[in-house]
Length: 193
Image (cartoon, rainbow, N blue to C red; front, side, top):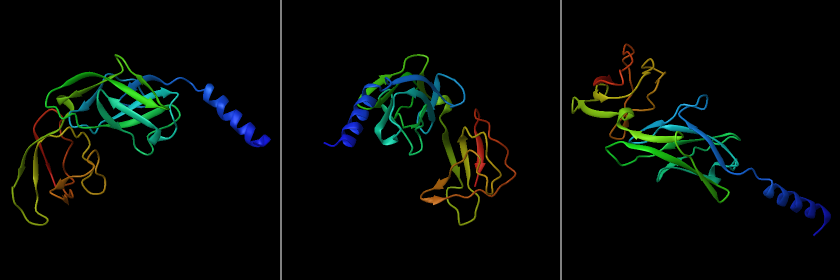
């Protein structure tokens, strides 16, 4: 082994021993504030932000679990201070309270405790009650009735607001009604596309 390779090996060994211990500092629904406990839809899809230390900068080298449910880390979901992940479907129809968050990185794990927990809650879960008409033709209006939890419907044209997409079967439903106001998160209301 030449001197250059020996020096690089020494630096790698030193970096391994100087590794900051894996820690979860807080869990929040926003990277800009500490708001806990975090509430997730029973169906998942909620982003949570974990302020952490000692984790890998490579998203594929980290794993996050909310209780026993995996939390999906996107390709751009890891920085030197935060890991963001999207909760997955709990499979439950009732609340699951105060689940700890477990972070696994570099072969070690750490688990959060209260108040840094996640609750799967029906209060933030959208429900679809009815779609009508039950049959239609291209460019006809379709109404969705339910508790949607959508605060920002956008302009119905290019700005989709809080709606990432609406599908009818496998077909994308485009919204054209630009006069819709925001839907109250706590009542049965309609969204049209």
